[in-house]
Image (cartoon, rainbow, N blue to C red; front, top):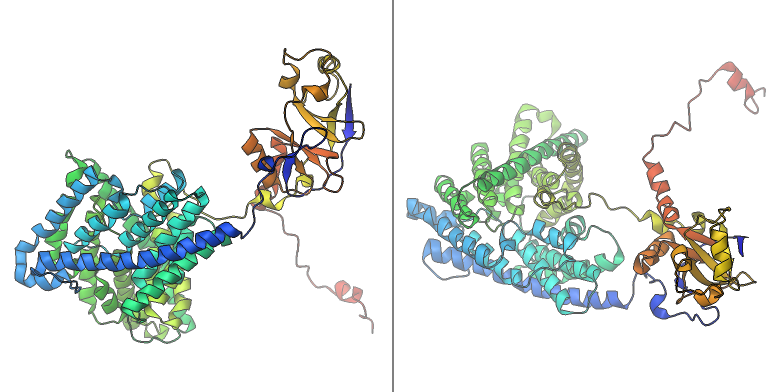
Length: 630
């Protein structure tokens, strides 16, 4: 005999099994409790610190390896002293052209017979592993990526060392996570911690490294991941200080607080750099598409790109190598406008062709050079044409450098803080924030994907564009569960229930039914399929037909906990029981109820009519106010 049991409700955490009668609760079937911080976070944090220290030493080794290769191929000496390839061009002349080509041939060979993952600048590849492969990067990438990048940059490639070091640190963290018993979330955290440590070890910029990890790798903002990443970046920076000291990477003369008119100009400059970022991104991928159409194996594409690098390097030697000294010169206003313009154009041509060819190299340093140079040119122009604005070409260069990366990568906060940390100019923070925000705005309006996500987007991988709080974690089960529950008595027989199901009365269309005793205590759950099982005897009691423990959710649980429990056990509905009166049925939750938990988020996007309106002040309005006649 069936009955309709009115159910009260409330919500709480904890989905378990019905312990009524012989159905005893088992810990393995209790829904997982997600603590903000637990002992696992302590373990991951310790691993992150060790990872940060290791990544810092790896960064030093990679920089030394780049210097050794540069000295061998351009100067004929073996030394770890860092020298720019530009110094050797006056002596080598045209003989310098084959050097990048030979390096690219080696890289092409390594990519074909080692791993294709070493191609490109590394961050999109790491993003792909995070989004599709539970943050598992092949161990060989940890060795092949830094070696291939050292060869590429050491032989004159127009890239910075930071991209490969970030990719190498990420691979190091991923491999560490694969050697240990970790969850996919913990592996992602270790990957991001290694990447952040690599960036911090290169530039001494721990805060921007953490922000970059959040914006491009973690796709979340929660203590379980941020704490280990921050500890890794801090540890790496501490090791860097031992080797490099505390001086800024891009030293520049002190700047002054900009006035309001100048600040507006810098924000406008950021918007302009957003346009440039869109153009740069589209041109880079257009060049890559052009290489895809070549009738030769992709192994040889880097050699063709390196040929352009060598030729341009002969004409503009400063385009070769990492070019950090160029960035410092632009930020310090030490270059003439004509020299800056030539550097920007030539660096872009060399870098875009090389990157589009699929060689191993990064994007940060080239974009900083191009953006800083363009910002300086705009600043010089405004200084001369509209001196009343008070624009400083050095601040303009700083804003241009950060804003172009903000627009191209969509890492707005990381870009602004990075420019501050690498120059230690506090008065640059305000124009940096405004410029990076406007660049981000313009880029997002005009371009769907960033320079980091376009490649993997073409492979059908969608990257998160925004990080929102989970709506289901903010809604309690009682807010969406049905209180009017159709229940079956434990002592009823299968025969009587089958007859009731075929009667067509109200309630017989449901797909599942909680089983309760005379006191309304939940003792089991049966679906229509269970009841239709031919192996059940007609005189079998419903309680005896229950096979195994029934999963349920407490009335003070969140909808997120209930949804996770449904997924874990492949079920479509959950009885809701009282926390105050254990196992007393108060409602039932279905998949459609879970989906209704998203309704508040959907409503947030609906355009609403104004709820406050200004009323015109009349004599009648004044007279109606208290004390008006006094």
